[in-house]
Length: 194
Image (cartoon, rainbow, N blue to C red; front, side, top):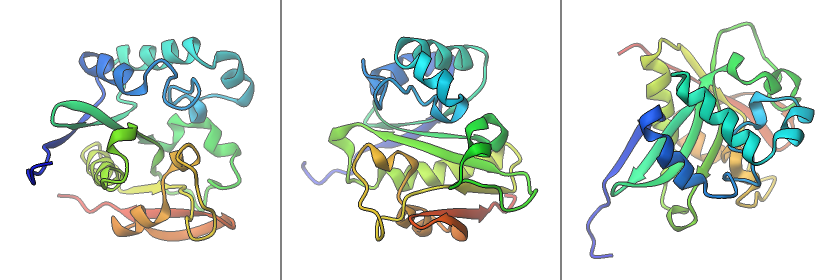
């Protein structure tokens, strides 16, 4: 590049931005037909819906006016995604050992990332984490948590890093509050009102 910093915008996924999410996820639906439905469905539902049915399910969420996450644009091109919402939006968390509740505090959760190959390794995950925290705060959340992989203990592949890397969360001010599995810390950040 010519040394010019790219323009990065991170915006909520709305019905108007649905085509951009489709463009980012591509024909494979990000990770093997997931369409970021893994945490929203049971295992049986996910297996039955992999691919087109998951695309339609995510589209239905967006068309209903819900915001399932945020899209990062680099110079106007859809480049990254983060799924963020109230923990209750992700029923699979209640059955996850890594994401087992630590208390009854109402929290928002960051559960998934996807970055287009050409934008990986440029710090986009960290920017998406910050944007997710800001968005959660704007929606009235007091606490946000995530369930990333600890890269020091488990060398995640690109696909396996979909839940995020713990170092990116630490850099964004999250602190570990539990570790139900050796390589999967549960991290939180308190969101101070603006």
